[in-house]
Image 1 (cartoon, one colour):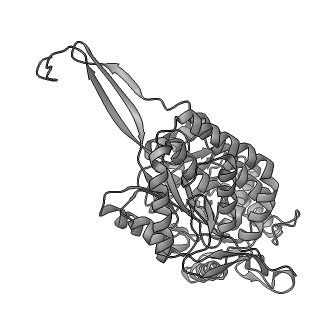
Image 2: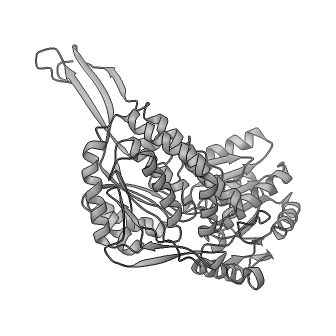
Image 3: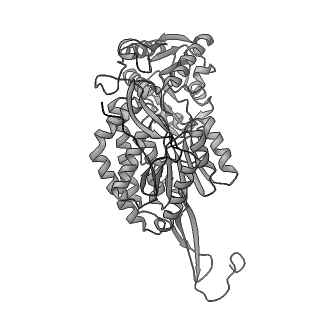
Length: 496
């Protein structure tokens, strides 16, 4: 057999080995005997080299007209379209979700890249009148500098694209670090940007652990912006690290999202949504519908249908087109899911289906768990409060819309929420009262689109939003310009 491919870091326009001389393996979670590749186990010196390259490249990249930056992104988007199937298959191998989902992941990167390419010709500022005569006022966007982009494993190409494309079109240079479970997908994205003509040093890619590599990316004195997507616990550390030097910091963290099913809901549609929201990506989404609150008038009928459908899901290798749910990402995550199943049982939640890992036969060499549903949950139970990040859904009965909204809002997170109802008044009340950054009506809690802001409230984030034009506000500074052509001293607020 041919030896596994060795992938290198991308620093200053060159593919180079880590100065540490160390590497790590990228393993298929559906088959741990499938070695996808060898990646660099980098250290702080690699980060310093990447930041130095980005700092030098920024000097000219910031002066490149935004439409020219956008044209490079446009070429990258076209290349992503051509390579979509290849990249989707590689992503399924390295993180497990089924091919339909990895195709969607790559498509999201395509959409974001095309969108941000267009923003190269829409760097709109503001012009307005002055309160003084013979004076001109305007505001324009300016790039900030070097951006550290730290991304998770569950959307290993989509989420990096959310960060790198707006950063680049605004004129920043970047250093990117993928999750150690999914370095291949970011490699493919960076290679595509290289092939599209991104100048030397503007994009840098360094693989390695969060402790050594990630910490340096947060604390390096020349890094001006840190964008992080991951757990709330790590996000808190990122925020603290950035606070010392007042770095710009965007945090996208946890979620404990809820679907509300009212007594007038289309139950067939609601079950479809709960199934996709709860078990898509094996529940490993920050927007996963890990809670379903159901009106007591339809509770039994909904639960019966939901359990039946969950039991029929085919679990297996995501490369198999008949499979509907893949593995979880690794052994550690599988153990976390198992621990929460035991917590749910201990708390008195009723285990309706699932509750164990799959083993033997085709499952022997992977990290698989049965789709799991707990019923009759109290909203205060840990399984209904804490993010599990696995195929576990807690179903909670309720008496009214008001109680359902209270349940929805009664967690520390505020990312996404959903209501199924045919009553327009209820829908608008929910849209108004849900304390989440994203709200769906008659759709599950997943399905964000790239031209709309993405992010949440409370411990889900720190107020910034990714995607859409709102991302430009994070990756650029507003500069206000005054031109006085009166040829005399004018004192604002004094001489008006």
